[in-house]
Image 1 (cartoon, rainbow, N blue to C red):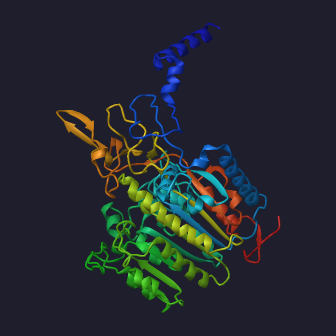
Image 2 (cartoon, rainbow, N blue to C red):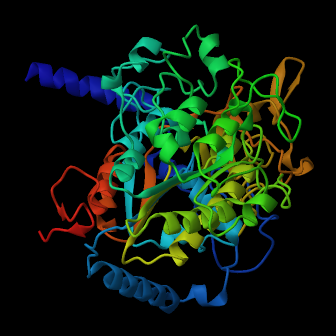
Image 3 (cartoon, rainbow, N blue to C red):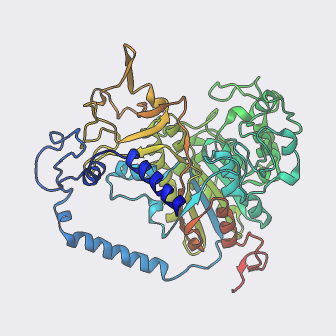
Amino acid sequence: MKLQFLIFLGLSALVIGGVPTEKSHDAERRMHPVFSLMGSGSAFNGRSKRAMPQIVFDALRAEERYAEYWQGLASQTLDQQLDSKMRLNTQLARNVMLFIGDGMSIPTITAGRVYLGGEEKQFAFEKFPYVGLSKTYCANMQVADSACTATAYLGGVKANYGTIGVSAAVQFKDCQAQAQTAHHVSSIAAWAQKQGMATGLVTTTSVTHASPAGVYAHLANRNWENDAEVVKDNGDPDLCPDAAVQLINSPVGQKLNVIMGGGRENFLPKSATDSSGAPGRRLDGRNLIEEWKSQHTNSARYVENRRELLSMSNHTSRVLGLFAPYHMAYHLDASPEEQPSLEEMVQTAMDILERQSAGRGYFLFVEGGRIDHGHHDTLALRAIDETAEFDKAVRFARSHTSTDDTLIVVSSDHSHTMSLAGYSSRKNDIFGINDGQLAADDLPYATLSYANGPGYDSNYLREGGAVRRKNLRAINMKNKDFMFPSTVPLESETHGGDDVAVFASGPYAQLFTGVYEQHFIPHALGYASCLSDRNMCVDGGMVRRPR
């Protein structure tokens, strides 16, 4: 009893010493300021820096003032939910498409809705009937990168940070361990190829980058995209082939019907230049593009720009499309005449895969890879615009396939540290300043900001040893190169460790509800399409056995 009493006293002291001295009701009002949503007047003039800003914002539409409006919306949603979930689709998923928005955190999706036109808007994938949460940590790290996560959502195994297509027995940069096939993890693309399905990958990054490499490669270091990078780490390229070599010569890479993205430099020797004049990076003197051409028939095509892609014959059996020396340009920077959109690449990929599937279906991996790059540089406008472009590709894929036989899953590999905060009015410019409150320094603050990253330096001034924030009113925050504010200065913003959303539509989409480990995803995809080791299929995997 004496011990319990001492513990109680200790806890009491912690509580008393650890909270503000203001009364509890005052603390509640400080943490949760209230606003009036009715009336008229300028929201800007009503802006307040006080703990409890009293701001007047009009409702967005007159009908939103009435309960009947919201009750009607709820009734519609209830009808949609009942209609989509009362009948479970347990047919065979003949086709499977996995879309990964690299770094597409839940706040990215939320901010993207406003970018589309308002908080009430939805991306195409948000209309999918089944939604879950994926836990993204690596085998050895709390916060993941795109390498270990690719191994998880494509290979079904948690791996170490920075490694691709290998188990956690392989440490970062361990060439000897990479060379041991016992450590290799096969991807769902390999499973699909064993069943005779057509396969492909499409990305806006280099095709040798971490996410797409998870389709075909086994690497102890995600940076080993060419042999020069292997040599730089004192590795042996013959023992540990780089990603580009594996894409062209590995069993999975050789069978891919579709390969589209950037990355020409990783396939060309240093002595050569590509069509843009950019030099290759290979030390071994190999031209892997020519090697790919020699491996395949006359119906295979190599293309480097949008015009060549869209003019391909409908008899094309395979395509290698490398549209940039390294990563493809951001959508906001791209030349529409030279660079195809992600939607156009997906359209072409689906056409080829459907033709080449011979009725056995196909697996397609699609990555919107530059969402992640925008966030790393705290370029929120670019990141969110890339999300909108990613959604166009998803919308096309879902609208041009049947939910009866095509399973589409949309997710992210990891999150980022961007947050959406403050008390702004509805449809306030998502890339602007909060229109409901001033900060304690009498200056406005951005609705979007990052926990860390390079945006620190571009948003703070140092004068006489003091550091103060810049006045964002004097800055064009709609400039696509504006770095949004960061709390902690870092050269590159980090990933976030929070869960990411998973959206699913089609056969067995119901498997993707709940909260689960990221490596569960390919196992569920495999079950839905008869690629897993569960004996639920007959006739060579083409017919599902009744349960």
